[in-house]
Length: 232
Ligand SMILES: Nc1ncnc2c1ncn2[C@@H]1O[C@H](COP(=O)(O)OP(=O)(O)OP(=O)(O)O)[C@@H](O)[C@H]1O
Ligand SMILES: [Mg+2]
Image (cartoon, helix red, strand yellow):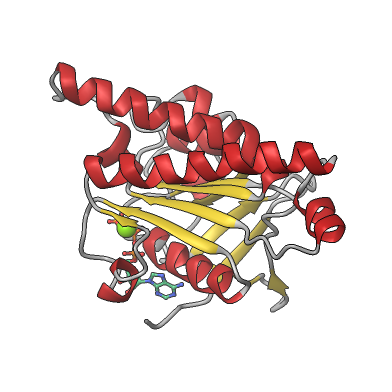
């Protein structure tokens, strides 16, 4: 991800912590970090599914992959195919008597890719403010699919990275947030936003430097990093 103050590289591991929440104020480098993660995971053989409602931050090469959504209809379709794969894996793993992806790959010899669903600017996707009845139903349906991935993805090798400027419940529902164990937080405008992500005010005290993030990976101690800058 980047280096800590001692200059030592810091990593995160999706096979240890399957789902991640990435939050920070505007301009703090969330999209850049999402790109870095996307690039590294694709190098590791992950299948990438990207939702980018802003539609400007990710180059045309991501659209060509076929796993790119910049509106509700495309995202619903994309998540349908991920949930379909999830259910397929559940059945196959159960038939093979395997508890998780590593076991399944070892037992069957089948090459099964990990999958990551990356949502950038999640408030544009999940905030129902100003949406009509149909719009709210679409958000509920998208949220349910994300929750299914959150609930069952760990063992099946299907992961979430949810990036948001605003961490409030309108942008990322509490039920979804609860499944995003890994936390990456850049400078926040106030202590309240930091508390929503990290349960303490530390991110409000981080300098407002793009790429400066606190990583909470569940090991008990947070790491502060300066993220690598990924050039497209
Ligand atoms: N790791 C980094 N090192 C140096 N500069 C960076 C880094 N990450 C981002 N930047 C700079 O900060 C700018 C803003 O980054 P980015 O667009 O990723 O922010 P963001 O958090 O996604 O903002 P928004 O919430 O408005 O979408 C980039 O255009 C780049 O110039
Ligand atoms: Mg961004």
